[in-house]
Image (tube, rainbow, N blue to C red; front, side):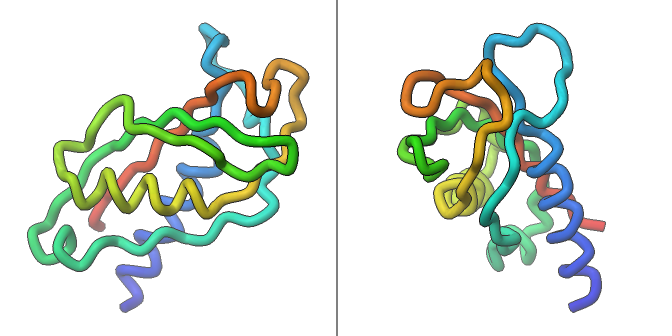
Length: 117
């Protein structure tokens, strides 16, 4: 159980640090303050099959910071990891701290790294 907890903390760390503005060509600071974002659960099937991967997503938020649309732009190669990433992202709430992102008008990017350690 301790290993699973470490994995989840690693995923959340990547989640919170990987949010970036789509239009930026260079690496930028996280343009969001997370209000509510739970640690995603590693899918049981993926754990038993030792599936790992990076899922890249695009998402759009409304004025309240709720994710209103999200899609996979680069699959991990495993449907269960892709779906778990989408589910976790859709449960998050974000508060923009950047003037480069307009809620409901622009897509933002985020990545979930699923790694077994």
